[in-house]
Image 1 (cartoon, rainbow, N blue to C red):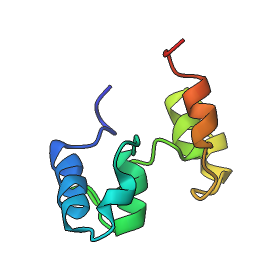
Image 2 (cartoon, rainbow, N blue to C red):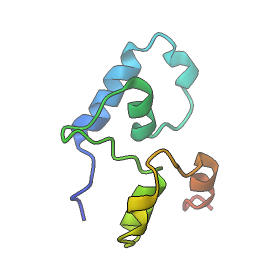
Image 3 (cartoon, rainbow, N blue to C red):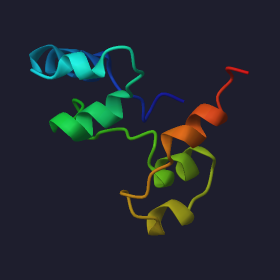
Image 4 (cartoon, rainbow, N blue to C red):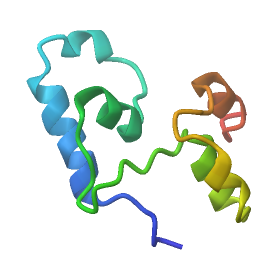
Length: 90
């Protein structure tokens, strides 16, 4: 279950990068995924991965598909609006 999970250090790196950003005030009051911040600031987790939960290949792999994630490019990502609509906030 946790074999592809991100570490606490990964979220910590995001906080450090945000704290050092001169334009951090533009990011206040918004929800940011650690994987999006990792792409923006260019850092990775301890294992060298970004653990992009928005990547379609990641979503397909977590749903149990075996061969389909291998042919979907990693830059194909689920839009944030779709992620918000499928969340449990309603």
